[in-house]
Image (cartoon, rainbow, N blue to C red; front, side, top):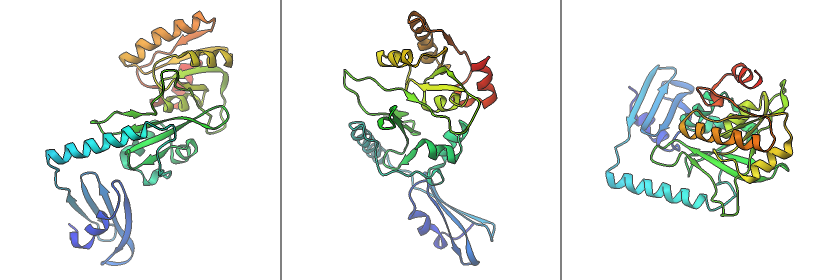
Length: 275
C-alpha cells in the first residue's frame, strides 16, 4: 500500500467525489491519482501499480443527525426559489460517480448531458435539471439526489394556483422522428429518450393538470401515448390519464412495459412507441 504521507493531504483537499493527478516520488509525470470518496480517501500510482486507502472515521449518531438536519435545511431553502441553486458544476467528469452512472445507465453521454444543461450542485448533492418554456426561458427545475435519507427529487414549491409545467424534450441528434406522435412520460430522462423517436414530454410526475391538458390539446398530435413508470403509482396514473385524454377527443393509448422508458435501448423504444 502507498504510504498515506505521500498522498493523503492531496486527497483530503478535494471535494467529495473529486479526483486529481499528481507527481509521485517514484518518478516524473503525474502518475499518482488521488480521490476523495464518500467513505474514505484513495490513491493509485500507475507507475508503481500500488494502491492506497484511508477510510474515514464513522460519524457518531449526533454527528449524523446534525449533518442530516443541515442537508434538510439546505433543501428547504432551495425550494423557495424558482431560480435553480448555484454554483453549478457542468462537466460530468467532475461529478460524483453515482450521479454520472445514473445518467449513463439511462443512455446519456457527457455531450448529451451538457447539451441538456444538467449540472451538479455540491450543496444539495444533487443533479439539477432545468425546465424551459417554449421561449427558452427557465420555468422550473428538478434536482435528483442519491441519499436514501432524503427525498429523491427536489423542485420549487408552487402556490395553490400554480401547476408544474411540462418538460418538452428536444432531440439531441438528427434522427428519424414521428414528430406528430406525442409520448407523455413521468420523468425528464424518459422524455428525452422517447424524444429520439417521437415528440417526448414529461409530466414531471404522475398528474395530468388542466395546464397539461391545454398544452396537449394545442399540440394537436395525431396520437398521444402515455408511458409512465411500471410501479403502482405509474400504473394507477396511466389508467386515469388515458380515459381523460380520450374524453377530450384525443386518440390516446397506454404503453405497457416492464421498465421505465429511459432504461430501454433506442430500438426497443422505437418498437414500443411506433409499433
